[in-house]
Image (tube, rainbow, N blue to C red; front, side, top):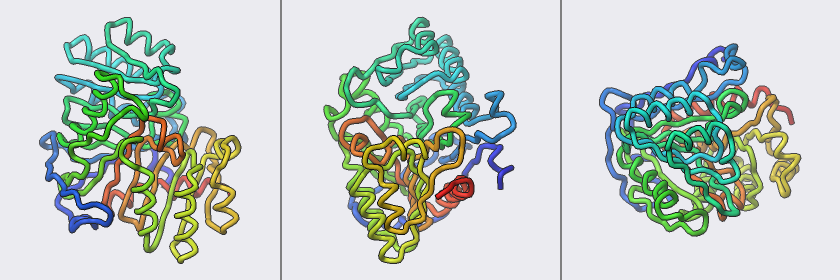
Length: 356
């Protein structure tokens, strides 16, 4: 199992029927049918960082390698919204794209604009906009040629790609790309961040090559309410990986489902449990839930929930009030047993190293 983590995991989804193809509870929005935006390439891929890999100390072979290849293939545009940035490989790829005439734009958290790599982009003439707000610009996504979206928990940093536990999800879909482009341009063109944003997701539900998915942005799309609904509908199991978990509502939903016989397991970042005010770790343990502290040297930075081995939640959204009310965040919910199995394999590896 450990050896498998030395390579990026790739998922090809073609022709299967997901658990939600007939509709799923809590939404009546029709799904927009979609096909892979790049012919001959998978519509969905997922990559995981692996701090234990032999080449991690050399900063080679991480999930950034696939992202760089996609950036190098860009022909028209690259839009990046990322909380933190110092990853040399991505910096170099953005500079190469800019030099060959690709339109490159960035939105970032203002507190992180001073890094040398960001300044190199600015000095090259790439526009970089900070949020200049009290809340965080906490997104981690890139839209390439308005046809594919790279998202997940990974900041574009050396630590994010090589020292911490993270996931990077690729969705090749013009509809999903449209959702993310509008979100990006609300920030970049209209200077709307945090609570100032408006709900404007044209394709909130997409049927991507047989996989049904939902796209949500925070704070405008009511992410917490949607997640609480999904948790309360769980029938068999809930597994989660949480960097920060302080949401009383989501915590209560997990405890209630566990009391009803649903198997609930989780791993939380140990440092965040110590530093967070109002962490849900103690209530989880007091209620008898099998929730553990991560055992890795870096951050356990995932924000993932897998429900009934068939639904995956991932994105930039920590399970906190700040993520719900103040920060710019993004979430996707995918209804796919095949994708759930891949995330559960990653969960099992992190859980095996965790401690109560």
